[in-house]
Image (cartoon, rainbow, N blue to C red):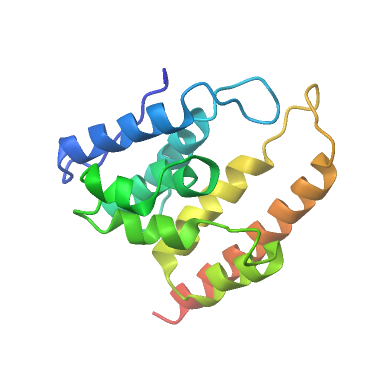
Length: 171
């Protein structure tokens, strides 16, 4: 993984190093659907997007969850493996579990509704960073079904943005 991300200074550097190692090995040489980039670049962009977000407190847990958000869903890693790697010290594993979409249990709509209805701003912000990053598509490298994916990510990003605004306007 060649990209660099900035981490909050309050975090234990070893936790971030462990998360980096997990995404490096879990996603190893996996590529995104566009075939242009290694998959591990996606969670690093998400972490950077969270850290650049204005108006919200971004916690270490959120950054670690962004880095690991697809590990349970798209790799052979389990929650126990994340815990064994020492990544539950800031409760990141619990957030990663909530971010994991199991197609055999929930439809995309049910999954999105669960994130939105959770009322958990941290969870919603991490998922928003994910959907926003997934919306960025290079028109030169499309895959079958890209239109449906883009439509779903966009609709979900709009819905979660509204939910975040509603929750934060009540505080």
